Length: 327
Image (cartoon, rainbow, N blue to C red):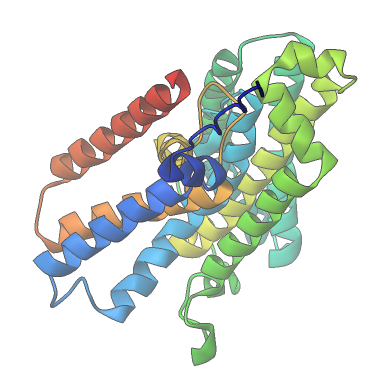
């Protein structure tokens, strides 16, 4: 009597798709929400120029979200993103006012942001302090530093061409402002780093199980410092884009930006438990929130409605992630 062969395990196509492409769910949600607002406000929302405007408005959050994805996949979090962006705008504006060129001033602003990230990573990795506590403290410290450097007022200065990042492109073939293409380039670079490099595999391994990663020979401390430094540098780059939008160095700018950035990563399939995430999903999540804000504005809905809808989407995304992890 021949032994019976084991029956092949049945795998759901939807489960396979969402596990391989975690950004697929957020993309479907984005398409549905966009189509809804097009149907409700076809005369204004459906205009091509409105799409360009929404893409430009997503650039700051999108650039910072690429770095936040790396941190969340590492199993950490960074609450100081908004303060880092504000400090970067103040540093660059101060240097421009002192006669420094725009490129050198931008590099200096990003360097200051990177240094803040190194300190955050050092405290998390070296002293073992919870990332929430470290970055909560640095959020206040960096905001205070920005206010002190700016003497608690906005710095009006000629930004010398930095506004070109957010202005309509000079060539029609580009379609979107340079800031949008910068966001996409940063997202591609971050995604390739996470998926195709040894460093990226180390990040995922630490986020999945830090002790196992350490036993496998991964330098956990060095990787953590590097991730926080990279994410802070991207927050500084987002600050450069923000300065091009505001045209002033504002120490009170970007309050609450960290929540938008974290929400983008979570909506995009990132798990706050670490080990999972998608840069593409984070960018889609950032654009989804912009679509909701813009759509509500076109419909004449008050801000509190926008906040309710955005909050509901965030809670739903986390709930879906929990249910998926249980299965």
